[in-house]
Each structure stands twice: as structure tokens, then as C-alpha cells.
Image (cartoon, rainbow over all chains, first blue to last red; front, side, top):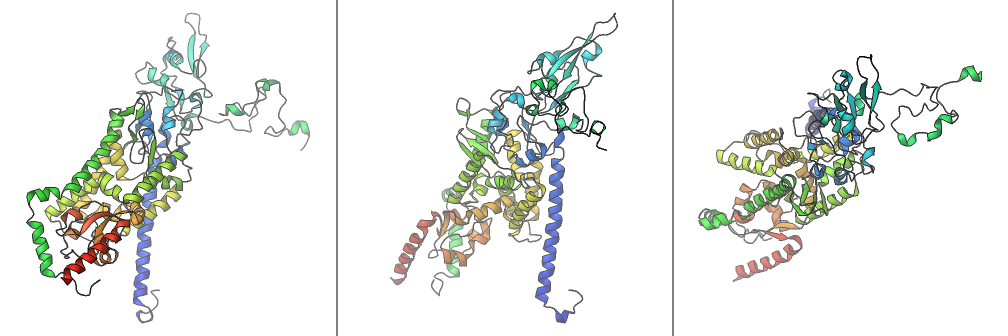
Length: 264
Length: 312
């Protein structure tokens, strides 16, 4: 437009176009900044422990209306809403197991209080909640020192399933170690173990699954189990029936069996 | 509309004089809406606070008013949801539970009835801060540095919705100083008060009615809702002397455009927050709250009386 002489151009039209461009520039820069702030704010999320039934991180960030009704209805009052300026995304409920662990109410009042479904009503049994996963620091766990602590094992509300004790025999002069082992297929992440842990800084801690959990990968075939599809998958509902060990290898098993088939 | 304005400049001055020579009792009486508004604002806050901190209940395990302004449940029965927050969450692609949709419908229904921006003047906690800033600005005689159009808020409203779609996060709810302030009063303090402080300073020193009148997208949203609402400020053109005292005190003076008032017979714009500043200050009693269906009849009657008086 600027190539055209002032004589050939309608000044009011030129004015309008410049104004339009200015408006678009303000909107564009402002919008980008706003978008950046939002995404930045939401990024702290993997460290947050959410109430039972919480949707996956991105969906929870989108769906939570920040009303705090779960906080009010939590019987042990462990839930808090993150105020502005904290480490976690603003306004959403979280709990810190060391100071207040989830007591796993069977009727899940926090989830029922949620008006938007950010705490999903699909969660029917509190035992199916996956708020986080207990992780043991074996360097500082008393049981790994050979002490008979086992407090986490005894306090665990999913008795004998989420935390089991494994015996490790040692030299004859020492008694065996009884070390706690967490099972992700049963651990809800309630954090009672973390709260009960007697070390100065808890040696067993609840962390979001995303931060600690690996995945074997589908191309590995654990030939000795014959149920490679389910070993590290957190969908117990999809597990093969109990007699799976005797079942034949499914036809759709991943990996190539070219040596026996003679295909290549 | 008569060609000759019924009142002249002298009448307007007489009206101003009438206002200034009001008795102390009349002056206190003229504060009735502002007192009611503060009672309403702090009362609602107190209901939320008491339910959260002192476990106020109407029956066993039935909290009185659970939640905050984003979403709440009254006496364990009536869900209430901020329709703007619900709209944003909907735009992120999340399907809201029925409860929040009912809640949003109830809130929308209430504000369709009594005026969208009644939220702003009678409920919103930030209004206390901006009112204080406005009052102090007036006392200090702070001069305007610049002007920006009040329509900016509608662009911010549109931007909120657009950015919500792009980012997948409820754009205003994540940065809203209203939400921050309200949440932190009820659920524990953080840095939210700095947002309030920023708004206070902005309104006090930078732009008059800056936040509520120019920027807030929630106010813009409720302005749109309030376009069709029933509770209105009725305008009686037969008694108004055009003294302009109402426009001086109104936080949204563009809604008191006399030409439009003359045409419609009531404050038409949805930007009016039904705050009740103009009605008690009017020396001639030309501005009064009324329900829209009744206004036409009332004004026809007032016109008839005025004609009678003039012909006498």
C-alpha cells in the first residue's frame, strides 16, 4: 500500500488499514503472551498429586473449574487449592501425603462433590484410584538397613497387595532383611505409607506415575510367561484369565517368528 | 419528544443545589444501595467462608454453601456454576457433568432476570477494591493519562474464548484476579492479593474504572447476558433537568446517554451493573429501579401527568 502515492489512496481507508494492523498486532502479541502464561502455569503439573478419580493431567487441567468443593467435602481435610504464586498450577486441588494422606473413603466424597467431572465419576471403587505410586528410596529405607521397620507394609490400606515384604537372606550372623516392595497394580497412591514412614524425610514417597513408571515395550516377548501383553500394563481389566499360563500363544502376539515360520 | 426541552440550564443548577443542600438524614439514606451491596458482597463471601472453615451446615453433612464463585452447591441441592467458566471448560473440549450445566443455567436465569452485571456490583469481591480505588481517585483528583475504548473488554472476551480453544485451558479462569481473590480468601492465602493490589493501583493511578469498565472479560460476558434482563433503571424524561449528577457518579457513564434514555425510557445498555448509585443521587428522582414490562406503562402515565401539568 505504501508504494502508492498519497494522491492515489483514500486516507481514511489507509487509516483504517493501519488501525486494523495495529489492532491485530496488539491482539497477536497479547494473545501469544497469554497463551504462554497459561501453558507455563500448567507445566508444573506432573508433581501434583490429585484427588481420586482425577482425569489425566491435560484433561484435568482443562476440566477443573477450581471451585474447591472437593476440598470442603474431604473428611480428613487433606485437600488444598493451590493459591497464586505456588509451584503447582493455580487453583486446583492437591494433597501432600507427608502431612495429610488420603484415607480412601469408600464413598469417595471428593469425587462426588466435583461438579465438572474433573474427578471422574467413572471411578466406582476407591481401590481403583491411581493418585500416584509409592516409590522407595532404598538407600534410606530402614528395612534395607536390616531393621525390622515394615511400618509402610503394616499401615498400607490395601493390605498385603500394594506393599509386600520380601525376605532377603544374608550372612549367618545377620537376620534376613524384610524389604517392602510396592506393586503398582494395587497401589492407589493414598500416601498413608509416606505419612507413616519413620525416617526424618520419608523414604517411601508418592509420586505421579508419569515421573517414575517405565514401560517395557510391546516388542519384548517374555517367553517364559506366555502373557507378554499384560506384564507391565496397568489395565488389570484387560489381563488374560487366570489360566493364561496354560493358554496357547495368541496369534496376534507381537514380534516376528520368522525362524519357525520360514517366512524370510 | 417535545421539540423544546422542558427544562433549562437554571433548572439543572437548581437540581444540583437541591442535591447539595440535602439533609444529613437524606444523605445517609442515599447510601442505601451501596450499603446493601457491601452486605451482599461480604455476605456471600461469608457464606462460602463459614461453610469451608466453620463447617456451616443446614443439616448433618449438608453444607450451607459449598465451593466458591466458580462453582458451588447451595444447601446440598442447588448447583450454581459460573456460566463463563463453564463455557470456557466446554471450549477446551471437556464434556461437563450435568450438574455444572444445570448450575450454569440457574445462574444465567437469575442474571437474565435481574441484570447480568448485577454480578459485578453485588457479588464480585473485586468490585470492593475497584470501588475503593475509584473513590480514592476522585478524592485525590487523579488526572487521566490516556483513554482506551470501553469496548476493549469485548475483544478480551473474544480473546479469552479463542485462547481457550487454542491452549486447551480455560484462559480466563487461570489468570482471573476475581477467582484468585475469592479462592484465596476462602481456601487459604497466596499471592492472589498482589493481583488485587495491581488492580487497585491501576484503577487509582492509571485508568479510571480501568479493570471493571475496560478490561474484565467476565464483566463483558455479563454485559451481553444483561442486554435482555428485566430489572432496569427507569428514566423519567419529564422530571430530569439534565443536571448530569448521575453521569458523574456512574462507573459506566456511557449507559446514561440522555438521548438513548429519552428514546427507551430506561437504561438500555447491558453494561449497567444495577449498582444503584444514580437512583438515590438524582435530585429529581428521575432514575428508579423498575421491571422492564412495567416501565412503558409507567412512563406513559408520567408523560400524561406532565402534559396535564404543562397545560394547566
